[in-house]
Length: 230
Ligand SMILES: Cc1cc2nc3c(=O)[nH]c(=O)nc-3n(C[C@H](O)[C@H](O)[C@H](O)COP(=O)(O)O)c2cc1C
Image 1 (cartoon, rainbow, N blue to C red):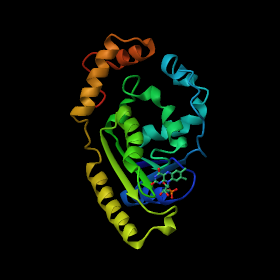
Image 2 (cartoon, rainbow, N blue to C red):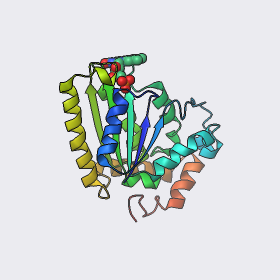
Image 3 (cartoon, protein in one colour):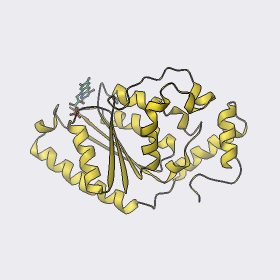
């Protein structure tokens, strides 16, 4: 199994360790990226990606290795510590750069067979909103199976976490890794994802952005083809 971890932080703290533990327990070939170390650009708001194509983004070449790894992976793990109740700025800046892949624009069909995981840790609160920040992108990229794991570690580093909490994390990661392994190759879009796809299909039939409309037409999605088939 190919696993991709995109860490919304450079440092090897609690959040990183949980993501890495999960990847190790799933087993397979793991690629890791750290933000902003491996990609730290802010979206310039030029909208070139939407209107002209993603190759016209000023940061296209820098982003490319992560996007290629994303397309290859079976499991995509996004991690972020909670910063003021949300994901880190570095993770948000990265996700902004993939806006062109959202369902309302040009989703990549490879996404419709993957599993995604959002992992966040906080001192006390904010895991739900932080995981949602990341899960919104995974869902809109077309990933059918998304797991969210949040832990209030009551610590600012991995070494400070209590034995009791660590034991729970290890047990939770055992279970999550088993679920991911047993679902490998079997995930299919549910009613929510299919419904959202069909709504976006209607938008593209009477669309406003020729770049997106052409893409959907070429894929045959405005006719009978579906990204999760074949
Ligand atoms: C800028 C910043 C903002 C933070 N905001 C929150 C917060 O809103 N809620 C919270 O419970 N902890 C907050 N924390 C604490 C971290 O989320 C927490 O210590 C987390 O487990 C750190 O993960 P790490 O070890 O992977 O860096 C914040 C920490 C920083 C540096």
